[in-house]
Length: 361
Image (tube, rainbow, N blue to C red; front, side, top):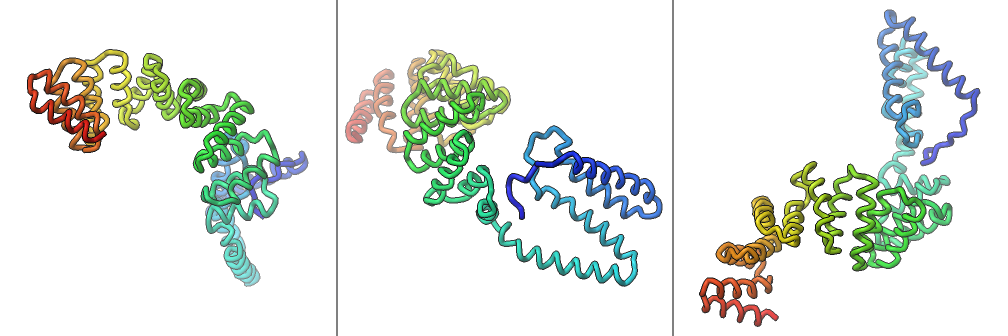
């Protein structure tokens, strides 16, 4: 019976037998490498594929029974070759084995048909907390069973960070923002050194309009896992939303250095420089961003604002007009166009845009 959480209560005599089997197989391979090369190939290939997920290597991953499946081809091929070299009895054994495995495959296939069917089988067979969390993840957010499974997982172990994170995500996806925030806060308190928990808490705080806490938690996530681009990016975004643009810039620069095309990183950097008063740099970055994202109406508006701040009236007018062609409902653009036209002495155009601005109120 396959289920998550294989029994690892192996005692010493079992380890000794396992070691003897491995050493014995190598002795056979040495003895057969000339006379039975196909058998030697099957034997060593079977072991080589198992090494990839073996606990001998420091992979720090949970060992589960299904990992022998990819290498089992070589095991069965080797057995077939060995039996096929025998008498008629060997062929009968092979035929019986083929029939048995065909029936067994058909009978267990429904278990492996989908992610939900696999984890539902695992839970039914006494699966652990992770089986409950994984089954919940396979179900839609509208399923009442999903929430019940996560509550069951937490009841099994109240200190399960994975279960609290999954339940917090479910609450967030279904609009229960305060409950989502509380679950993520619990996850952080259980394992303060886990970057993912801080990141989820930061996003929950942002949705509850708590910009300072969102910025603090996002910075902590980026500090704990500096290689994660998403954590660094949102640390910058949330710091900006908390009006801490100077602190946000190093995170944006870190993302830019590693992945210049990540999300809308140029737009975020341009906005930060604009807020810090570096207008020429912000204009250049907005223009670079718009070369790759010409439909981004907010970027055109921000470019217009930056050009207006730098008294580049013609460039500002062009940017605000482009913003309106991308989004005719961008009412604020009319207000700024009126001000720019006033500056260049075009009173008629200024009046037209002031009127459009009032009509769209």
